[in-house]
Image (cartoon, rainbow, N blue to C red; front, side, top):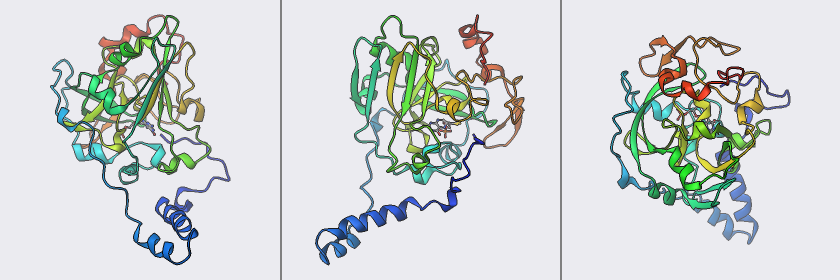
Length: 322
Ligand code: MTE
């Protein structure tokens, strides 16, 4: 995703003070401020990073594979999937893996609210514990025209909808990513409408393909891929798959999504994959497979038309493919 809107006063990223520098500067000021001398020494010896966190429920991986969801292409090499990412909270390049390790996953509060019978707030570990985990191999297609094949582990989004019990009148599910500029330097860029928000109709959210990933490649999800919880909607462009989710809200109003606020003429609400509808700045006819770099034809609904086309009957006037 390369949004073109960047105000003239915005510093280029290489001019922004590295997080490590301002962090250590703030820590220095804080720790040398109270009692002179001693705290200075203390500050010097107390600059260890926080201890590593244990992964969430590692004993649940690998989960049983659901044979209904397989892909004829080879799986994308794991290392590539783990190191070639879009996660604007941690930077606009693909190399955000190291920066994303600053995200703390414990505790990770998830709110389920809005038009529901039971509002809930629970820790991600508790939510995952309650859910039936399975492995599904899905095609993944970024709007930038690269594509992957990923063995996700997780649970059907409809299980979460069932847990929430939406009230009559709820028509959309709004999904919100975490907000913490202290760990996510991208969130200090005020021209983005943080936090990252995505949305689906309830018909989409309860579709069999809609998935909440908690893992990939037979292991708990890594931070750069959206730990502890992210959406996976294989018939839509990848930007619909919000990462590191903290809130699911049921509503009667179509949510204003992150990218539709940043570049409305390029990224809409629906974002279904279609080779015949070009992005305003590039063609969507073909896609580049991560790993081999082979270019192959893009498929309508990313190859899932037989599953999802009926969701869009009667909505032909909507901009379904941007
Ligand atoms: N979610 C959040 N919170 N922030 C993001 O920048 N990028 C999206 C999506 N989810 C993004 C996000 C885009 S554009 C893509 S293609 C996928 O995450 C990339 O997922 P991956 O890095 O796990 O392959």
